[in-house]
Amino acid sequence: MGFGGFRVIPVQVEVQDDLDPPEDISVYMYVKEDEQGDMTWNSRKNLFERKWIGPDLGDFTLNITAEDSGGNIGYAEMEVWYFCFIPE
Image 1: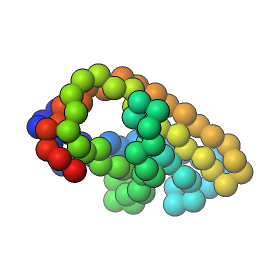
Image 2 (image 1 turned 90 degrees about the horizontal axis):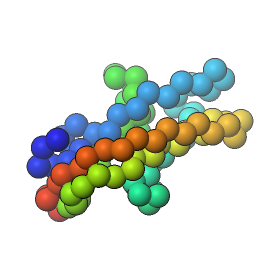
Image 3 (image 1 turned 30 degrees about the vertical axis):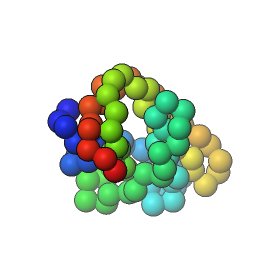
Image 4 (image 1 turned 45 degrees about the vertical axis):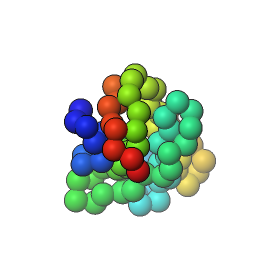
């Protein structure tokens, strides 16, 4: 992790659904239970992405939630180490 957090290389996740194409799935990113916002589909990489920026330092719980058009929700969580002193 560099001084810029996830500014240069965003958080990236792979989401698959047996009914909806990726463009129709809503994917959200949370840090410490605070919603950071929706993740954007990157068709070149076949991944959802979101930059995580702002000054902070330490271990954090990163949560990703995905919801398809049928209301089915998938959830993933992991601990990450974050280091960024560049303001948003």
